[in-house]
Image 1 (tube, rainbow over the protein chains, first blue to last red):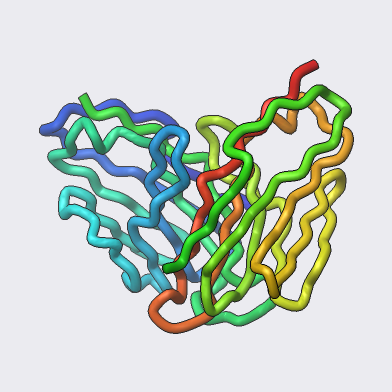
Image 2: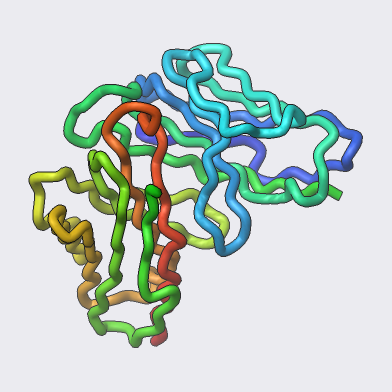
Length: 118
Length: 115
């Protein structure tokens, strides 16, 4: 299995809703990432987990709450979002951070979850 | 400041023609550079990855070059197909320290292939 699977593909939510985005990989990757991408812009890093521990938080607002229950799963919990949070949310995984191997830190991206906040 | 600049911003070519996309970077210390293809509304897909010692790497009709001295890379697409229409993103990785785990993305080149 060489894929990163994200669910749901599309999500519409109100500003008072609580929802979650899910990401799963079975490639044995020990680093997992959340990126946010607005139209015609490059992905922006939100969070990085390394060995199931949060290693990078790019000063993301607390209405986004990541969770890594195990080495294969990554969740992003959403609460009280704003319309400007509407974007494509990409999950990715890679070899462990610090693995200085050829091809290390090559990210495999999921297809993304398109989020619309009304 | 660690930056990745791509040119052109957009490009239109006819099916069957070749094209070259450019990427300049200032990321230091350099670890590797990769080119991704991203279809609209989809996640990026890796095309090539190049480390410091590699000058050229091919993947089918895609050929990437890297000049680590001038900090420039190019992606050459041969015999373009309609399915090549996508955004091509240059991504550079730093090798250590506080930048470990961070990737620096270019804004991408939007390629459109016309029949």
